[in-house]
Length: 579
Image (tube, rainbow, N blue to C red; front, side):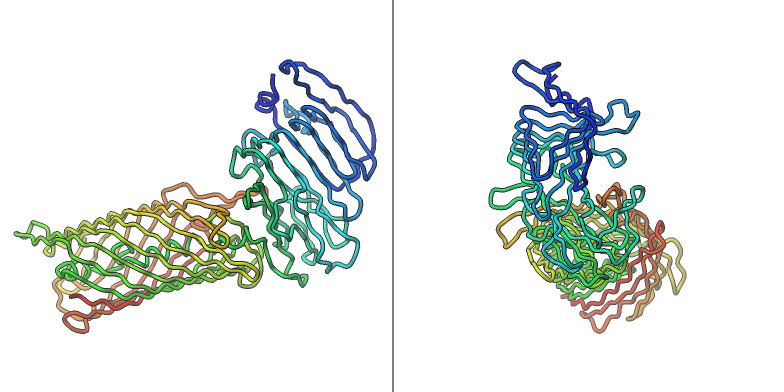
């Protein structure tokens, strides 16, 4: 059995800590049992200790079995593959462990010339775990030259499976040991430090089987967080840390460049994309768009929209969108009888600028990163995102003015740029995507003054984001997919009521059909900030100023049906000219 097969059979667990482990026993054997000819593996079953200031050097393939541990003063060198075995029968919960202490500020190092084997299947309950002791100098609590250092782990070969990475207690009175059961601390005045230079903590020479082969970060009770993120720059690849100091302890909020500068909210992109097109956006009672706008070959709309969003993880996002949309008639076919439909096809063009500001009110929020970056955590403004979106698409509407029935189909392509900035860094994210929408509606009840309309809409949208540092280095990428269904009731003036001012009241129920996206949050898996079911109440009006000019406005409040705190408030205002 070769080492990769052995990896498939057993679970693996790795510890690298700053703890001192006393000598108890030593059992090291070199064997070729089940190993192809010429290959060896070192089995460690007991405790193996070398005094501080010394490296442990192991040749060939190394397997640490349950109850097997290595304690070294400065580091471990493995000339071959490294595997650490969990209890194969899951009876005792014992794991093989690698403990590395260090002298004062001397950083520990782990050098593996061969391959790194993590757990075969990503697990949250019993994962392979790499523990790293953060560097710490003896001194005051406000000292800044502390933290994890780059190149603490160097892997010459490939990385297989998954490894959950945690950071353990530095040697300082200003750090509280996390509770073992909850993985949290209770003293909000403690400070955690991690890597500050933005360089890779784990350097990998070969291939990486999974994009998040090393994953997770340590959440503390006061909200300070550290996250491991992919790193690739100047031909070097691996994983690096973002870092945050506890704002309650007078620290400066920051994060490594590759982590922070590619962030923007899913909500910002979705809101900007939806506000850009009146054909795409929930119609919100805009019956006039079909009944009158479709009879004119061209319309031009100037729009402005605002939104405040708050999710159940205490993240607040303030969005503003301003833009212009144009519809150019390609064909128009009038219905010949009361039962036939008037059909209209338009080319739709659009351009919009948007501005998003993110806030974290509880120190535990997540600022979702479509580009795959990390999270900025602070009680103040966490980031500023500005960008633009362009739109090219087609709409086709079939409408019966006698019955109020309609069918509306929209297909469009979107592209644009996001400029992300924090206190210490900035970067650009390129966006491109496409989407399709189908909507149908009818009149349920109507009298001489009012009508009750119903609408059903399905929309699919796919946005691809690529984050770049200084427009050159591609640091991360992601795809955001949404498939949303909407059912709406709206009260508005009857179709045949002649009036220049048309108010309306609408109730929408929307459902996200795609599985809720999950975000690694330490050992916890958090839902992304787009929850599945929402109910929306809205009011609005359109006003005809003259034969060609209209203005419109609306305000609505959306509440998530599965959360006590997630909500959205948004408003739209615009002017439309019909040629």
